[in-house]
Each structure stands twice: as structure tokens, then as C-alpha cells.
Length: 183
Length: 183
DNA sequence: GTCTATAAAGCGATAGAC
DNA sequence: GTCTATCGCTTTATAGAC
Image 1 (spheres, each protein chain N blue to C red):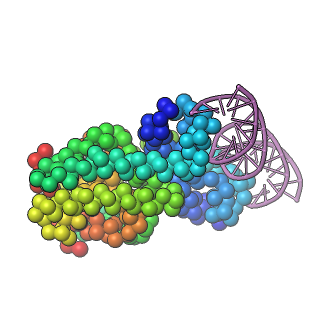
Image 2 (image 1 turned 120 degrees about the vertical axis):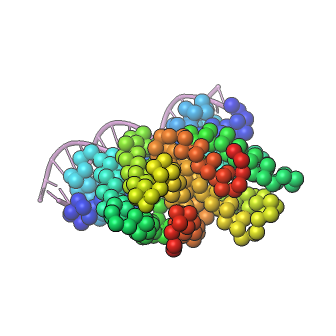
Image 3 (image 1 turned 45 degrees about the horizontal axis):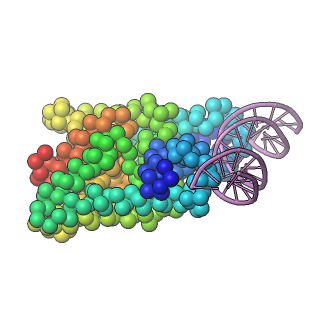
């Protein structure tokens, strides 16, 4: 647990489960099994730096695993299917919440607004580009991409609110269907 | 500001803006212009009681203003249009966030899980009933209602994340359109 | 019913030994 | 690089004067 790269996902889970305000250093030392001193050795900027790096790490991970399929040039529709699969995997079929969404809704958005914007804009851009390559007009592609990301976020909220992950699965199927994709 | 009924909306805004964990008593005394002593006089159960009563108050308000149009028996489609108008008003066209959604995503869901479930289930039930009365088959009506509520929640997340309320307006229009309603 | 004072605990953050 | 001890502050909550 001395590697920064292995530390970030653990901290991410603490932020995800408790929000920025609720994620205390006590919870973090417990989750990482590291003393406060060690945490501050890795992150001299404290809690704010931890959150910033966690968000950056998530952005990187999404670029590598979620948006990456969208960039494959030969078959855009297959790329979109790959994105849906990656999304389902990452959010554990609706049992896991979106940390960036959590931050966006809270007061911490003021401090991390740019990173939050970058995450969602990057997602929408990547999806819109794939839709455009599949022959859909530019403006329509953008709105469809926005709608899909929006539905995923809403599905995560509702699935957790109703404590029913099937809400998430249904929403993913719906979104795929509306993009004229087989399930 | 001595009336409990006038106190709850003020506290609601504090919880909405800072989340359950971030809503400190200091913020609440500032917002209500009341001392801690007075707040504890009204809410002996402290912060938890405040949040519970705020959530109950929101549930009551939604029943009175948002779901109410859905129950009008003559024209279900007009009732649904009334719901969309009330939703747009309540969430200030995407500039205001859903407190119940915020609670649902955070760690406080464990403490307020029943109230969160009741809120969303009530919303979906009311909308599904109206759709059924407009001639849509039961199962389809339920899924459509779930989808609409989900899209509203997602739109609130994305509008705030991108700092662009138009995302919310577009999503409401989309949802109306898909239910075969004129805007 | 409202206030101030205060308690006890937890918070983020720092210092310094090892 | 990891730890313990500690600082200063904020937190929730209570007590008691008015």
C-alpha cells in the first residue's frame, strides 16, 4: 500500500461512500491502513489534494477504459456497445455510485468545478464523436450523447434511492435501444 | 421566523446546498438567524430530526404541488403537463438541485432510506397511474414513469456539473416529447 | 422562546522521533 | 516512509440565565 497508484482507488471509495465533506481523515487512515503522517507525506495538500488526485485518476481511468472503445475507428456502433459494457462494469451494474456526480451535487463543486466539467464534457464529446462517425448529424449526435450520459447519472441516483440495481440495468438497455443497438 | 413551517424551507436550503454531512449547525443558525438554543428547542433530536422533518416537508410539498396535477381525473395528459410545469418551477429550471437525490447518493441514505424510497416511489406511482389512465398498458406505464423521473434526476446532476441549466430544460422537453406531448 | 457559555468529541493539519 | 503526540479549530449537543 506504499504505491500512490494503489492508494488513489482506496481513497476514491471513501470519497464515493461519504462525499467530500463526510470523508474524514479517520476514515481514510482506516481504509488505507496508513497513519495520518503517511497520508500527509503523500498528499501535502491534505484532503483537497487527495480529492483532486482521485478525480484526476478517475478521469484517466475513464479515458482509458470507457471512452477508449468509442475511439475505435472501424465500427462506431461496436465502440458504443463497448462503452456501455465498460460503464456497466465500472458502476457494478448500479450498485456503485458516480463520485463525480456526488461531487457535482455538493458544495465541493465550487472547489472542483473544472475537473467535474472536464469529466462530463469529455464523456459527452467522446460519445458524440462516435455517433457522428456512425452517420448521425452533428447537432443530433451531441444531444443524443448528452441524453445518454444524463440517463446513466439519473439511473445511478434512482437505483441507489430505491435500493434496486435493476433500475440501472433497465436504463442502460433503454439507452442502447434508443441508439438502435441490439442488446 | 418563529414558525416551524417557515423554518423548514430555510433548513432545506442549507441541506440542499451542503449535503447532510456538510450542513453544520453554524450554517443553520446563520440561515435562520436563530441561536443554537432555539434550534434545539424546535428540534430536540438535533440535526437528524431537522433533516427528517425537512424531507417529510418536501414529500408533503411534492404531493400537494407536483403529484396533485397527476391526479386530476378528466385529462391525464394535461395532468402530466401540469407535473412537468411544477417540476420546472420547483427546480428553478435546473438551477436548484434535488435534496432527496443528494441524500440518496450520500452516506445519509442509510439513516433516511425509507423517506428517500417513499419520495421516489410516490413520484413514480403517481406518474404511472396518470399514464395508465391515458390508455397505456400497466407495465409500460411503470417503466415510462421510472424513466421520466430518472431523466429529471440525471438532468439535475448534469446541469449542475456542466453549470448549464439549459441541459435541464432540454431534458424536460425531451421527456415530454417522448410521452407524445406538445410542448 | 431566545440567548450565551460551555462541554466533549471529532476535525484537518503539523511536528518531530524513529 | 511511518508513526505518535499534539495543536487549534469546529463540530454536535447541553445547561442554565433571562
